Image (cartoon, rainbow, N blue to C red; front, side):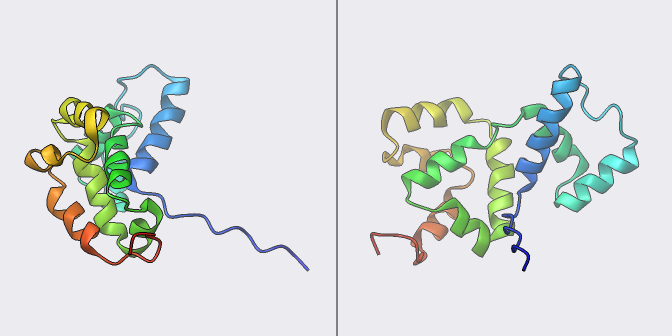
Length: 145
């Protein structure tokens, strides 16, 4: 009797680009920005990931931790990343893209460090409406519901 393979969790576009970026920069200097790929390859990879080629290039330049603040915000809201990813994969991927490309990273990081429960983030976060909608849902894994 053979062992069942362990189910792999679905990777988001940011995670895929991050993994590629770490492997790429381990062997080359940063800033290559898909220089080794033909434009058609970049466009196909972007299409496969559900983003534009321009967004894919921007995400690659931002590096692997570009959407880390989203995870921190979700934790502060008691949203389980795995549950959200499983129930709403497209929404989660879009939130990661929006977070990674946000211009308020420094402010968000500062606010998270000072007081993650302060609602100041609602004034500048591009994901605020989506996070509020997700936060209002009755998640099975939440202990407070």
